[in-house]
Structure formats: C-alpha cells, structure tokens
Length: 391
Ligand code: SF4
Image (cartoon, rainbow, N blue to C red; front, side):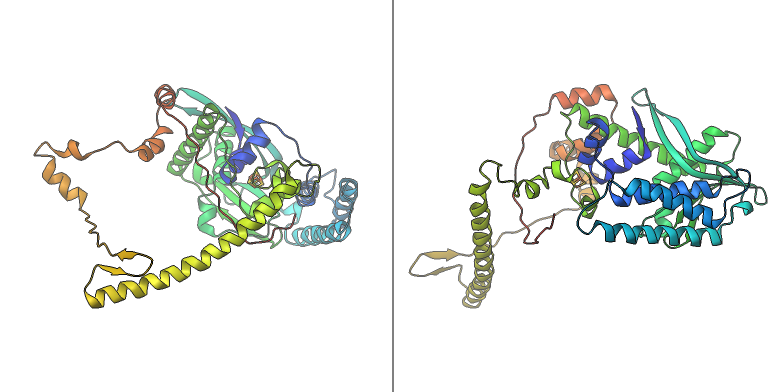
C-alpha cells in the first residue's frame, strides 16, 4: 500500500474522513485556515532562499502579502473579510517574530520542502508498503555534529514534551533521514517542531529501538486500513471537535442532516421535524420519570430493609425485592489448581472481542479465512444531545 503520514494521521482521527480523502479521492475546497498554513510555510521557505542574498524582512512580508491576496480572492461573503484580516495580521506577526529569532544566515540549511519515500516491510504478510511525506526543513549543525529536522506548526495548541517524544510524524521523518543517509547514527538526528504562534521550538530524539516499535505501529495501522477495505469498505465516522474543520461535513452521515434540513426540496423533511420534536419531549419526560422512580425505589428498599420483608403490596400490584449474589474468582490462582487436574480447558470459552483484537496481528491468509467465517449484523442505537449546533 502507498500512503503518507498525513493520511495515516487522518485515519486515526476519523476513518471516514480518510476514506473520503484517500480512497474515494473526493476533493473539497481548502478553507482559510488551510491556506493560511500553506502561505506561511511558503514565506518561511522563501526566507531561507538565497538568491543571491537572503531576503530582508520587508521582502518576506511582501512575498506573504502577494501570495495571500492571490489565494484569498475566492473567499467572499458575510464575516469573511474580518476573518481574513485576523489571519493576515497573524501571518505578518508570525513572520516578523520568526525573522527576529531565526536569521537565515545563522543556519546551515541542507534542504527545504524535502520529499521522501520510505519502504516498510510487513514480514508477517510478506508485503511492502511505501510511506511518503514532505519535510519542511533540514539543517546541518556542524558544531554539534547533528542533523536537525524542523517541522513548522501553525496550530495554537502546543503539546507536552512526552507527546512529542512519541510523535509518529517525527518518527517517520527520522526514518526518512536514515534512508537518505544510512551512515547516520539515530542519535545524531534532532527532531524539532516549531510552534510559530508561540515562537517556541520543541525538540526530541529517537533511539534505534524506538524506531523499530514505530515501524511496527505504522505497519499495524496499514493492516487495519487494509482490513477495513476488504471488510466492505467499513470506515466509520468518528465525530470530534475537529469536525469543525472537516471539508466533508456536508456529505458525512454524522452532519449531513444539519445541512439538508435547510433544503425544502428534501422529501419528508417536513414530516420528520415534528417527530424529532416529539422524541425530545418524551425523552425529557422519561428522564424526569426515571429520576423520580429512582427516588421511590430508594424509599421502598429502605422500608423493606427496616421491616425485614421481601415484598410490598399496593392497590396497583406488588413489588418484590430480590438479592442476587455476585461471585468473582482470582482466575490466575484458579488456573493453578485446575490445570494440573486437567480441567482448565473446560471453563475456557471462545471470546469474540479477543479474536477481533488478535486479527490485525495475524497473517493475511489466516485473517481472510477468519473474516470469511464471520457474520456481520448491524445494531442501531439512538443517542441524543440537547446542544444546539450552528452550521
Ligand atoms: S465531519 Fe467529522 S465525523 Fe464526518 S468525516 Fe469529517 S471528521 Fe469524520
């Protein structure tokens, strides 16, 4: 399979978004936030380009402005100008601060927007996968005898050091540099994330052993994707706050109705609206009744305990109190007793949940044989939220 870090990252956030983007190849227009990120990245690249001199800060700002004006033309409408202005000013401030702290002539830049391809071998399934990506900047620091990979981030959120120490993107970049220069020792590669809004750089390193584990993680994620493809393209939506930035919202089953409900031509829209309204009214009543029933149960239970009785009678019927015992055992110790007696297997039963977990680690052939023996049934549950959602 050929994939990229960003595709795998999308898969982990929401499998359905991954499917729309990478398998169905549905193209959606970029939003202002995405364009902002890409124009800032271009201006940072320009900052380190020496033709024949490094650009001044005014030249960098001009470069940003021209690109921005060009890309922003397509965004029109209510409130958009204000949003564009906020992002534009933020872009200029990021570039000025960055320029002050990072004068290009003080760095030994080896490559920028560097494309890579690495091959990963899934020995169990005897398959090869290709992982692609682009690294923002690679520096060589001769004083420390280090190569440094720098990835610019325009996000506001700055993760904790321990998250970055295990970050998959950084690990993949590390693999790509080792592939590019196999003579490099893993500890001679510094991995840095530069948080532009905060002007902060957070760095980390990777050991050879960590890299092996990360490779296995990537391979098992790819296997999971392949499994979903062979299992009728089953890529479920996973709603999260990130849906707000997802370009597929209008076609996503989790959100589609929010947009359809504004379209009068949608058949039966008018019929479903009062039903949804009634559903919420009954749910509210149910909730109130449930709370009241719980209160009454506590009082009745207390009465029965006081009176040492198991049943109470009223005009509408009677209520019985049943006390059930729940027994649990220390299964490890039980195993020590039953195994020598040859009885342990008699209490073991197949566990479908454990089987599901095991599947992704099995070789392709066995996995497919097991999948062929499965029966898929869909169960629907309805959950509701009283939160009002704006489009
Ligand atoms: S809107 Fe949310 S749930 Fe739907 S595809 Fe996008 S990220 Fe996934």
